[in-house]
Each structure stands twice: as C-alpha cells, then as structure tokens.
Image (tube, rainbow, N blue to C red; front, side, top):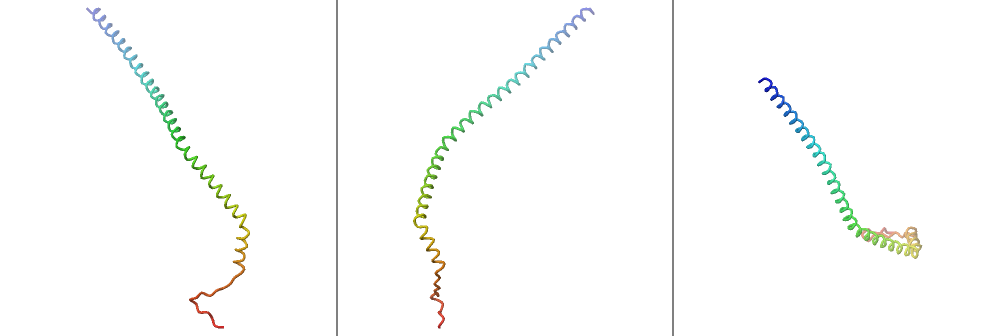
Amino acid sequence: MAAQNSAGIQTLLDAEREAQKIVQKAREYRTKRVKDARSEAQKEIEEYRQKKEEEFKSFEKEHTSGNKKAEEDAEKENEEKLKEIKEIGGKQGQKVVEDLLKAVTDVKPIVPDRVAQPVI
C-alpha cells in the first residue's frame, strides 16, 4: 500500500507541475497580449493624432487664405495711398515749407479783444 500511496503522491506532484506549467504559459500569454494591446493602442493614438493634425492644417489653410487676401488688399491700398501722399508732397511740398517758414518768421502780434490795449 505504501507503494500505491507513493505512486499516487507522485502522480499528484506530476499533475501539480503540469498545472504550474500551464499557469505560467497563461501568464506569459496574458503579459504578451497586454504589451501587444498597449503597442496597438499607441499606434492607433498616433494615427488618430496625425489625422487630426492634418484636418487642423487643412482647416487652418482654408481659413487663413482669406486673411492673406485681405492683407494683400490692405497692403496694395496702403501703397496707393503712400504714392498719392508722396505725389502731393512733391507738388506742394515746397509751398508748404515756405508757408511754415513765413508763419514762423513774420510775427504780427495781435492783442486779444478782451484785454485793454495800452494807450500810447
């Protein structure tokens, strides 16, 4: 009977070792699947990020093109106004300078009405 008990114990130990191997393989498989799932999720996140970045760039390009046209129009208008001002300055600039000099050098003091003028 001791031999039979010893054989039964040996069978149980073999079964336990086999079960431990199965559990170990299951743990390794689960660890591998978790790592694969993480890397797959990271890849999906990166693809989604790139997609949204492209959508944003497209949106930005579409909406800033109107601003560029407005900027170009404003720049053109400014150039025209500057050209007009320079032309006027070229035609009447000398007269303006002369008028300013004349106003500064030809002083004609006038007593205001509310102040009594001194009697001479």
